[in-house]
Length: 357
Image (cartoon, rainbow, N blue to C red; front, side):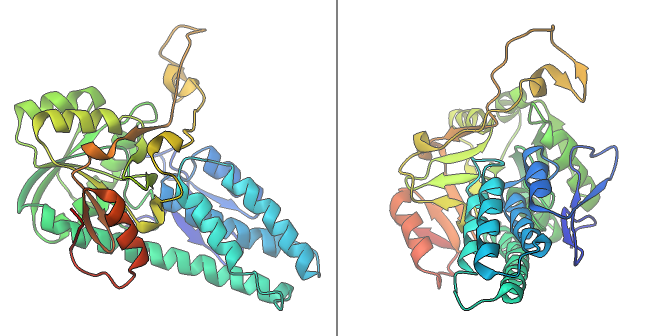
């Protein structure tokens, strides 16, 4: 396990590592109701698509345990209300809704009484927690076929153990490469406006002893021109049926720069992040956040008062800019429509590549 845990169930409360205070302070916050967990997700105490999904799952556990009703149907109704509150906290990442719906599906059996509903939800949340660790590690192992023994990579945002239960997706690939003895160096986009790359990814890689360098977001293209870069590695918050990718704002720019310089652009993607209900990225709801994230840095104003802002939290990278999508069930290459369908409908897939070209 990582030297820190973003999410931990104590038996009665959910403990979250407050990522807003990193790297200066390591602060844990405790939650005992679903509304509190929803606020933690919205305010980015916990962030990262897999992590907020698991946090929401335990939010529903808390909703069931905090209820005073002795009627199973009344409890289901209360849980359904909590589920909507949790899903609304951040709309772009599909893992949030996916995890909540999976939790609700676990308690549809009408024969379950209140105690059984509570026990079933706890078991389902713990299963999501354990699966996330296994899935992320497998993504990292699968990706090693794409990572040379000596590698320089560019990473955007934070996709490591802070964004998941452990290992992470794209950053987990870098971590596992390092653990396998590869000479890997990560260039970390600072990732404005919330600086997840500078604050969080650098924090993680320092803890693991992985060589890394922080760059401003706008430097990636010039870096590719000046130095030998083997690939770009990013995570994702949603992948549509055609392979379009929603990820942290700035990902699209990085993909365009990679295309211009002939650098492979790889997306690390748990299959829970694939949303085939949406045909293309144009259908994804993009969360817009408070403009003060742009005009202030930790409360310090950096723009004149009254400055107008536009602050989308995510952007869409078209499928044609994505070299490969790395999942726990294999590596997918374009065209992605058939590859995504195959990887979702064939749980037995274990090969390193799923090439449906």
